[in-house]
Image 1 (cartoon, rainbow, N blue to C red):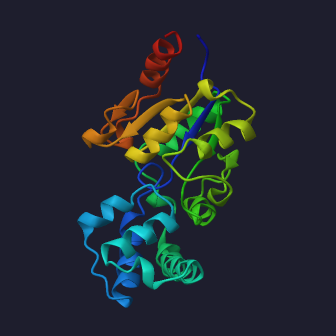
Image 2 (image 1 turned 180 degrees about the vertical axis):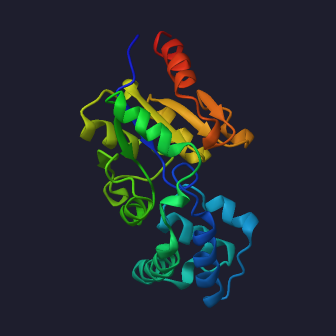
Image 3 (image 1 turned 90 degrees about the vertical axis):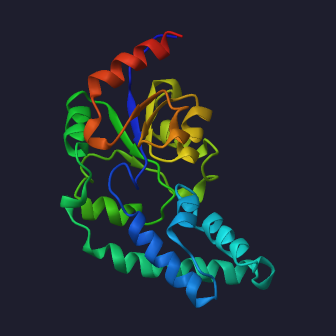
Length: 225
């Protein structure tokens, strides 16, 4: 079915800005407090998934899943997020990843709707700190949907923007995110050199390499399939 792009749905971390280091520092601090050593390699497994899922992975790493009740796990994730929120206070519009501001301007000029679909509950703070609130038409509350790789967060964005999923482009830097976009029957754009993103419809090595005309061209072929 041929059509045109009506909305672009962005992930936050690794697409709009880079906060993975802040997440790592906050998770490592919390893990250390409960006797679990967390390294950067393991931290890669936490990319793109919810706070609760990340906490469960860390507890499994330390063989401590049965030591905490659901309420205690919730308190742990809250502690991590409070540390994370302190760390991200230093973020400014200069932390918007290269090429993103220009892309947002182009989308607004073309009257293409913009949403953010992030697993982070801190996305509203980041949008404010980055100074991009005027561009964003809708921000999905991650607490209202199942996390990636389920497609729910992208489908909710499309629904709230009043556009058909097949008219949407989703941009992600994590495998779970690309899986979610594909499951939503949207056009997926992967950001990175990770081979795990090879199932995206189109891949750019980094945000600075994003070319909107290229997305439109490949989308046209995809929508005619």
